[in-house]
Length: 489
Image (cartoon, rainbow, N blue to C red; front, top):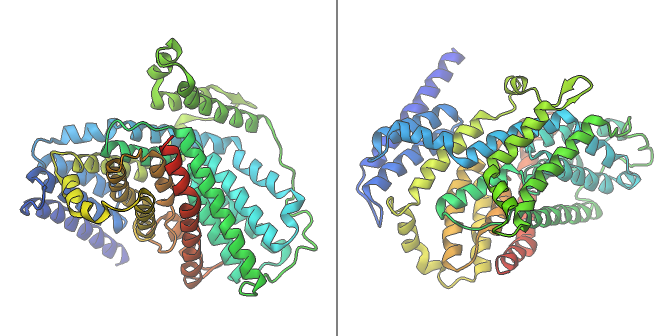
């Protein structure tokens, strides 16, 4: 009976999504919208409806097909080709394979064990919490996989909790775990191969093509935002402990041997670090080469997709102890590529990219509606408002949907102010991954709400809101001012 109900729900969601796609396209255009724009808006809203209710790949495929059938001048062939050939979709595919290879190298486990072997980490419950967040920050940066990082760090905390006597569902435990999830989400934007950075920049480029950006500098800004977030969270926890609002139910007096084995810098880990450095070098070197140099032209022939493909190919050819670092066929079987992200991202990028073209008229309509309101705002206030709205929105809906709603507007209005939006878009990329307050916000949010053994939903709502406020403070005090400074360089 339950299976029948699930099928009925599935087809109901698909049916309503199709009705939205068709119905909105039949409405008369408003503002500067065109008939083409209304048809594309219908497809986009239908996709959003289905994605919000958890039907990802089928709705994405329906959206592609319906756009080809319903939208004037489009075909199913053209839409499908656009989705499959979008540069950032291809980059994400190869980036996910690369991250899978890092996991096979054991870098995450190495970093976690290494950080937790430092004596400073076990001086007090506060030191332990901050150490776990710093470890999470490092793991999230290197892996660029928030869910995998969260699971690893949760497992580490569970092991430590048994040794020191930290209780399940205690205020201290839930606070530490929720902030681990938050740092896992925010910390993925500190390396050049971050999928969140690449996705956010691709949405920006779809909205306004030709914007110049420097990925390494964007990563510097995101590192400062993430570090500020951890610092604000650490100060908040210190105050909460000092005022007895959070009372750790244990001490660290007998906290020796928290990590039972030494971090082993073996051959696989060495290869993993080598390929990280090699990929980062491939991305950074062209920025420092003369525009007319033959070497810069050579790197241009490789391209962003090619850089990932070259490194993944090298990892496929590297054997350690008789085993290849990446067995491509096995990687596909083991789910190295998140196909939900792949198809949702591809569909959202192509459809939203068409929505902000002059042919659709949506961008012109929005500009006309709000230009009078934000025309006199300072760039700082305008940027901060968009980022905070994005932070609130992404805690209600999935990050990719929020990204495709917020970033085009942020890009458009910052360009109206004569400011390069790339650094602010980089911040938005990590902020829009922070969907923890509601279970609908992200897989991380769904997981922590469902982790009832260690925390209650009431605790998650409270401390996830605290985490969001700490992130907002970091953006307001550190991120936005530095981003605007770099934009004016």
